[in-house]
Length: 223
Image (cartoon, rainbow, N blue to C red; front, side):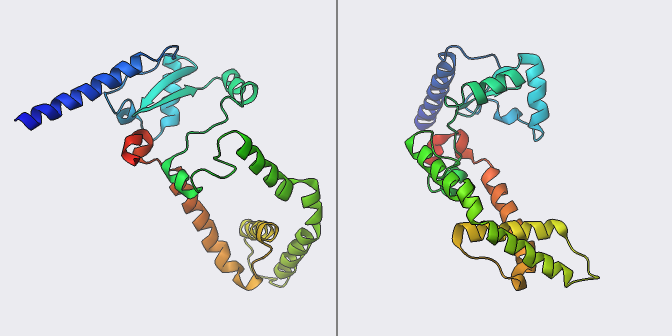
C-alpha cells in the first residue's frame, strides 16, 4: 500500500509539473487541449493533414499542439509560411531530428540534418562544389553522355521487347550518381536486378526514416 501511494504521488507530481510548465510558456498561439503527459497524441488521426486543416479553421492559421513533451506549432497560411521559410529562414533552419534519422545520419552529421552553423555551411559548400557546381557538371558531361548513349544502344538492341522507361531513367540516374560520388557504375548485366531491388530499398529507407518513435515525443525514454 505504501509503495502504491508513493507511486501515485510521484505520478501526480509529474503531471502537475507538466501542466504547470505548459501554462508558464508565454506568447503561444491557441490550440486544442490534450491529456496530461501524452498531450494531443491520442487524438491524431492517420489523415492528419485533413485534421490539421480542420483545426486551422477553428483556431486560425497558426496554432499549437502538444505531442507528448514536444511543442508543435502548425501554420497553414501561405503568408506565414513565406515569412517562416523565406524572411526568417535562418531562425527556423534547425530541424527537430527524430531518433531514426539520428541513427541513420551518424548523429545528425549530414547536410540534411546538421544544425545551422559553421559545420552545416561547410557541408553545404562541399556538396555544392563537388556535386552541383558548374565545373563539376561540366567535368562529368562526357560521363553523362556516355551513360545515356550506352542505355540507348541497349534499348535499340532489344527491338520488339517492352521497355520500362521509368525504370530505365532510374537506372541511368543511379549510375550517374554512383559515378560522380564513387567513381563506379552498374554494368548493364546487373541493371534488371538493380532496377527492381534498389527502388524497393530506397522506398524502405524513406519509410523507416519517416516513421516516428515513441522516444521522439518522450525524450526521457531514449536516455
